[in-house]
Amino acid sequence: MTDIASIAQAAQDGGADAVSLVNTFAAMAIDIKTRKSRIGNVTGGLSGPAIRPMAVYMVQRVASQIKIPVVAWEGL
Image (cartoon, rainbow, N blue to C red; front, side, top):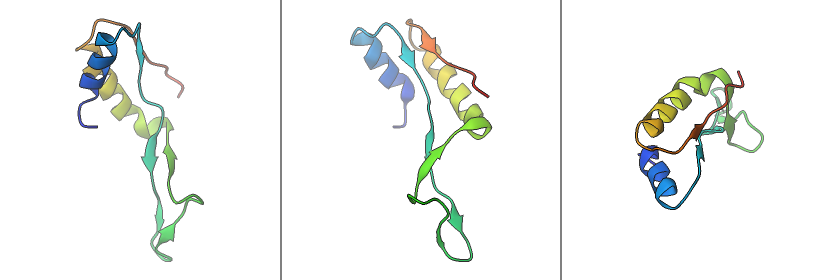
């Protein structure tokens, strides 16, 4: 998805009372010596302080485009 605001707009147009954004981002870590994933399932969810700037950006983009509430939680 390249434009999260358009998805939020579609939710609003469809009758949503609010939107909630950002949980985790798909991520992968490679061991450079073995050239294999460092995560047991190959990929996993990245969360915490590392994604905060991306999450804040997405909330700002969406909140500036829609009129329904944007639910965000600061769990850091």
